[in-house]
Amino acid sequence: MASFDLIALGETMLALAPPPGESLHSAAALFIDHAGAESNACVGLARLGLRTAWISRVGRDAAGDRIVRALTAEGVDTTWVRRDPQRPTGMMIKEPGAGVRYYRTGSAASRLSPQDLDGVPLSEARAVLVTGVTALIGLEPHAAGLALLSRSTPGAPLRIVDPNLRKGLWGSDRRVELVLPFVERCDLLLGGEQELVELTGDSSDARTLAQRVAVRGPREVVVRTTTSVGALDANGGWSEVDIRREDAVDPIGAGDAFNAGYIAVRLRGGTVPEALRAGVQCGAAVTTAVSDTAGFPRKL
Image 1 (tube, rainbow, N blue to C red):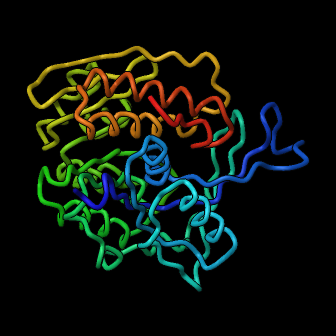
Image 2 (image 1 turned 30 degrees about the horizontal axis):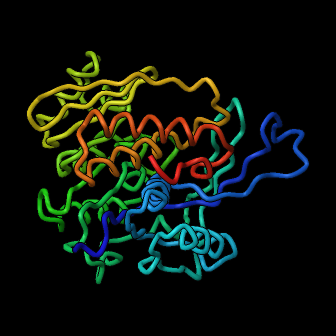
């Protein structure tokens, strides 16, 4: 039996947000949480009974204490999280209607490096996960992400990537150049439609986009759009499921939750259509709370 179902690498930040219906301008108090693409997926998978581990760096500060404690309480293994005494834990602030503001330049995680993988039992994991955010927060994290994918034997563990193209980060102006090497080294790609358009330079329909990306290496490609999610399997088959989120309170984190639901079903041997439905269910559940993970279900 593998030691872990999934091992993920990436930054997690302290997340601040006003209560539902309020704004930063008027709120008397803010909701405190944690948020990070890879750790969000780890939490979701852990809630569904899978064994996950998260590799990262956080500051030796109260924010870092809180994040490590919260993820450990969720059942995520934090053995390979390093504490940095000089650099702070990153932070993000959610402003309803305006988006997210990041305070992560010079954070502890911006110094993630391939050495942070030393001693991690990657060969004993069923899957590894990294997103494009890790590629964009610094030169060393980019190298760490590549190392995670390169040190893993193709197909075993399953190498999973979400492009997660973001603005305002160290490498955002070169995001296609920096993220494409991750895409080319993965087995399963989970991406948003506009991200794949940017990566391929093609504005075709979702299925054609998936086919364009598959040529670069991934054998399974999932495309999330505003109204549906579709997946191209290893045999070239296409499956698609509609999305409805009428009760959304906060859409941030829905993509990570979708990823967790999809990965959980695939790791348990479920079909692509089953995985798509599970991903949609998990994504919708997360949008009902002011948190990237609080609404994630404990069963499918």
